[in-house]
Structures are given as structure tokens and as C-alpha cells.
Length: 116
Image (tube, rainbow, N blue to C red; front, side, top):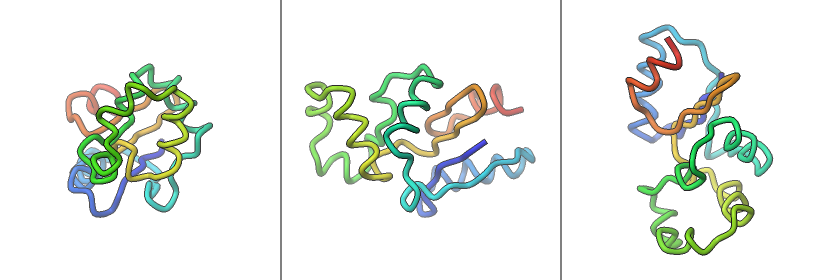
């Protein structure tokens, strides 16, 4: 299982602590240095069965600076994937990719259900 995180993100720190406390093994990927490319994002989107807008880090500075709250509605899926692939700071984190699931953000109940 891959866990995409940003080292300075407090939510990521909590999530990694939770994984370690529950002895869940994972491969840590720095999302700023190794952002998933467009094809991986498309695969994760299909596997996760989540709305594409859920993949965006809506509380991030980049999201606000680009005014994406209003722009996303007008963008095609392809344009949204291009944007997500262009900057790891736009991707909701932590992003957890397992064999048959994708988790976005840190929700203890959801994580316990999928990972324990």
C-alpha cells in the first residue's frame, strides 16, 4: 500500500502515527517530490470510485491562489487531471492507494474499516 503524504502536513503526521500505532505496513511517498502522474491519478480515480473533486486539496494555498473553487466546475476531467498531476500540493492528502481501494484524507473510522 502506498501512502502519499507531505512531511509538513499535520493531517499526514496524524495519519502516519495512526498507521504505525496499528502496525499497518505502507510505502511512504512524498507527494511534493513524487506527485502521481496523470495516468496514476486516473487509475486511482477509477479504483476509488470517488468524485474527482474529492482529489483536490481544497484547503491548500495553491487551490485558493488558482481560484479553483469556481473554475473546477467549468473544467473537463482531462483538464482537472492535468492540473492535479502538475502539482502535488493540489492533491488531497494523505492519499492512500491499496490493492482494491483508495482513501483520501484521514478519517479514523474509514481507515479502520479498510486497513484493520
